[in-house]
Image (cartoon, rainbow, N blue to C red):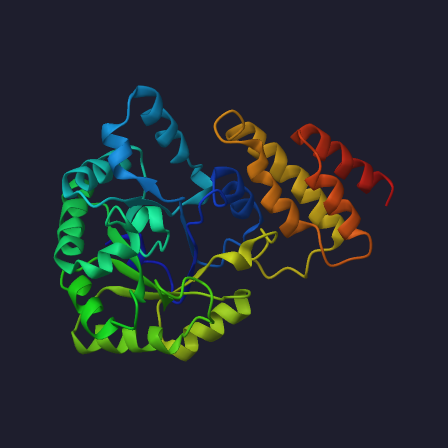
Length: 322
């Protein structure tokens, strides 16, 4: 039995977010999580095609993108591709790297991804989507395969789209409660997650159903799970600047946030510097620093820095000056 079916329900998942949920951020979240709260981590999405076709340097960089620490388990590698052969090879590699599961991205709305018939583009091609699940299963062996998708492409298509996926019996399907056309421009409609659970139950499927979209915190996640009867609630933007989200601790103080941002920068320097642009950390500056007197001025200072060491110096001085 895979980890998906051994975690107590409902459980929670860290959403895969490009240039956000890298190993540095996931390590920090794992450190500050309450071990009694069941959760799953996803990597950023990674090109299965690149893992197979890239030159040695490119492949090395992609594999580095898939690095993880044992404290993150269970950890799921998320892949995207429109080519079953590459999906199979990518899933096999993820199994060899020691992941607990592999997930197929069938929800990314970005034009450059959809143009490759990947991500949300697969909603328009159910036969290929099903073939990709079968391919991932071949490569994954006894490692479970899951899917993250949306309710539809231009409109709600759950009644036809979800049964296609369920027919391939993935371990789990997490549904972003918006269409591809809607991106994240409208509120997530969780009634569609509830409907997905009904469809799953009517078909007698054992696939776990999860929901994603506009989850503010752990209490909100639990309420959404109760309202929809889903098994999994995935949290994305609610985690920004809040590595304590998978815990029951009191709200973080400004000092907590400054101290943990320094820790986040140091983890980023350890794992990511020289691999991705250090400017990626600036989106975290915006998330951590806000909501108290003087925060705006501190944030402006941080955003104007060119080097992470300078940002750390500013933050350390802030702590010393109280």
